[in-house]
Length: 128
Image (cartoon, rainbow, N blue to C red; front, side):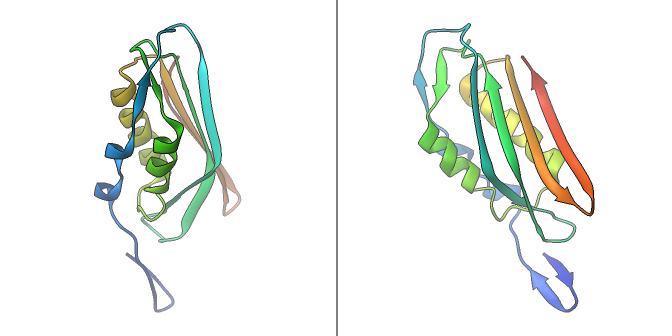
């Protein structure tokens, strides 16, 4: 919760992130590069309570024999909407959840946030 000029902005903690929404399907092509992205990503700054909007890019090789099912990814991403978590923490959490469900070490998650106060922020976790 954050307070500004007597107004209260309420948000939830990282425990509300729904990694259990993530589903995969079998895919036998461990050297195929896959990129999934959306510009409809949002979370909440835990300091100010204001929303952070940006682009989310997930790149991976399905070396674990799995691909992410896109509808489940959308529900997972939506679960961040009211979560108070710093931008860097969001990127790390998505990376950890995706790496675990896809069972791959060749994964990279990038978040590119809309400017706030004149600052542009890009966070990258992992490598291909």
